[in-house]
Structure formats: structure tokens, C-alpha cells
Length: 121
Figure 1 (cartoon, rainbow, N blue to C red):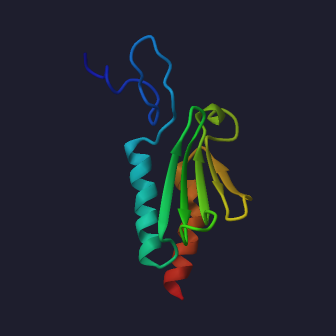
Figure 2: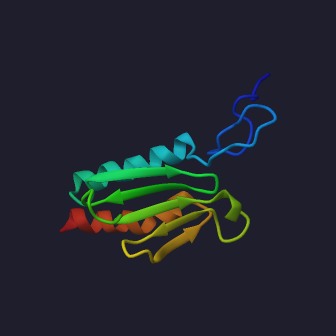
């Protein structure tokens, strides 16, 4: 019985037996890392709001300077791309791809550097 509930790929929702999971999600450690960065960006005055979206194909975390604007940064997790370019993608404010990769920490690195710069000003 050990490991029966947590079996599978981290960050995916485990459906009842015989059913396909209906959405992709963030694992606890992934969400912890994302929200830690979000909290530090809020403290630095860079971000004020966030939104999350969970679909069948991807999980999205978007951070906003103001709620009425487009996201300042958008992080997507697409498990289907795990074996290709990596399941993590960081998009900028204008939709440009800033970073792709297999490791969440590496993909968040551009935002981490921006945070160091904002605090150092």
C-alpha cells in the first residue's frame, strides 16, 4: 500500500482508477519555489498579483505588476515536452520565450537575476 496515493509523475493529478487525469498541476515543491520567488518579487515592488490556470495540457503561473495588465512573466509546465526541449517555459511580458528547460531553477534564473538587480538599485 505504500506509495499508492503518490504514484505517478509529480505535478499531475491522480484520477480515480479507470479515468484519465483531467488537468496538469504543480507539485508541492515546484509551487513552493514559484511562490517563494513571487513573494520576493512582491517585497521588491515588482509584482502585485498572480493567477494560475490548469488545463489538460499545461499548468500556468502568471505574475502581474497590476491586475489590469498582461502578465509581466508567465511560467508554463507542459509535461508532454519533458523528453524534448523541457517541460518548463518562461515567457516575457510581450509573449517572447525567455527560457526553456528541464529544470525549474534554471528556467527561473532570469527572474532571479532581475530580482538581484531590483534589490541592488
